[in-house]
Image (tube, rainbow, N blue to C red; front, side, top):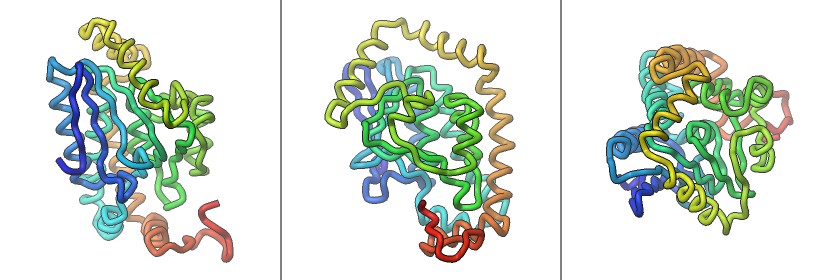
Length: 268
């Protein structure tokens, strides 16, 4: 459990991604640990609210480099299996029967942005940045796309899924990804205010209200499971295709991929 810290106090379970040396990037261990912990708190009657945050300066930078390196060399079946594990994590968080809050203390990139989108409420420090940067690796934000789409809508999804550009917390608030932006030193008080508001509601009513919002939006955990099969197959095809392999190798080699003209900066 070293990659994930767990703290329960006054009905609030705080889950802290604890890999600050790699900006809380995912690997298979962290994905499995976070999924199992969410399933446990989901059935724990002592837990009323779940807060998800990151240790250090970042919320989560998405995929771990070593994990990406393994996936770049793996076959399609292995990549699909791997993607389904990430899909299970996102699905578990999104449809958890408890209210969830993303305490976004820093950068939330790729899958990190997906975690934010899966939470019911998101509070971000004003210095936080966001991106679905997969396209710059020759990939797509496949597994996280349904959750991000539901938060920011088609217009913004089409922009950011295609450009991969970064945007700040103020813009994240504007497009609906987060609900409140605050100074970094006020992040705890803002999060506490939301946990106190949530404590006033009946837990069964909140669970039903959350399910009702999904029903009104035309999705449920069952429909999501079917969609996850499609997105996992998509990312597996992209990872094992020529463009995806070139993009990931270029990123790992710290060079521009072949589709960028010589002299261009891929970070711009």
